[in-house]
Every structure is written in structure tokens, then in C-alpha cells.
Length: 121
Image (cartoon, rainbow, N blue to C red; front, side, top):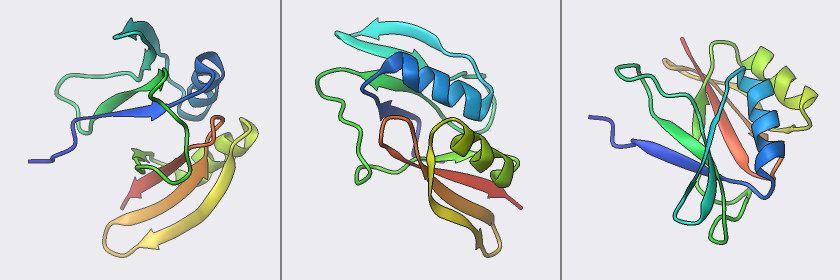
């Protein structure tokens, strides 16, 4: 069993974050409000591998480089990092090998969060 089931990435500007993540990961978002917080859900496909989450704006959500780190799956880290840079993000940790598993990298998003990327072998 994989313990992780859902994640939320704190944002200050929901529309700016949606634009950033849409460009980087080529996905659409579903906007809603839950418990007084603005949310934009990443796509979710029942039965697919991995977990899903949302961009979250609200009083208790504070973007940070030092909080929990989530790794997003990608088939091509190099291409994804180029999209990050082209969308106003910044590389924090360059593509590096994770022996026997694949490659990892980290970037700073439009909101100031540290987010990881992982590409499987």
C-alpha cells in the first residue's frame, strides 16, 4: 500500500498558479470552494497510478520553500524543467540520477513553493 493519497499546494494567486501548472503539466483544473478555501483540482483518473491533489488558496495556506515536498511524475524531466523555466519558475535542484529508480529534480513554482519532479527508469 502506498500511504500518500492526496496533496495540496498552497498558493497566493489561484489563477496565476493554474496558468503555471497548466503550462508545465499540460492539464486542466476544476475550480471549487471547500470550507471557505479556493481550490483547483489536478486531473484525477480512477484506477490510474499515483495520487492527485489541488492548488489551495486560503488563510491557512502559505507557499514555502521549506514545507512538505511533493514529487510530480513526468516522462521527461528535461522537457518539464524547460516548461517550468518558460512559465516563470526556477530550477532549485538540477536533474540528478536516483540509482536503480530514475531521475529527480526540484523547482520553485510561481507561488514560491519547492516542488519535485521524478522520472522513472
